[in-house]
Length: 254
Ligand code: SF4
Image (cartoon, rainbow, N blue to C red; front, side, top):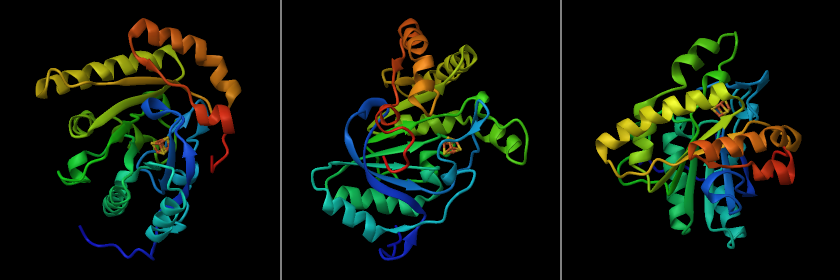
């Protein structure tokens, strides 16, 4: 790994403490690091991705690795790091450096990815993340028109890449944002394909699936919560709410 200059500004656009609001580490305090840039351009029911400042309109980086070290030192009570985006795997060297910093400070490391880029294209065998949260994007996220529509449609599903993260991480979860029965049908089709490939490699390897209601306000989440919780019971998937939205709304540094 190339040694990065710790004082140089990196494509890091958010750096703050937070409560993890989704999935298997819900409620756990983390140091959140958000990288800028994404290879997808999601739309959800007419609105664009809720971190459009990291995807549709990517901001320039604001923070250095020294800033990351400083916030870890200032918050010794926090034992977990969350690397999110945008799409963090677009920055392999930065990702490796963040993981190395987290390890050096004894933090558990989680990373969120859209699952379109294989683990082997980003990390070497010896560099691992404790929890990889893979959020594949469904057909309903494809922009209806514009320059990104075709690229998004072609890129959004990469089963071998998803399988690589599941097989080569300590813990992993698939986390789908859903808003309709059509979304759930697509999740079922995709999960079947993923499980088939995983079971060829290890029949006992766990594939953990969370469904989350789509919505960036408490009102929108509330509309879908009961329906989706019942569908999770019907199908045997795990339900995840979006705790950070319930507590803080869509406030950026929450
Ligand atoms: S993959 Fe994530 S960050 Fe990228 S456009 Fe979609 S929702 Fe936004």
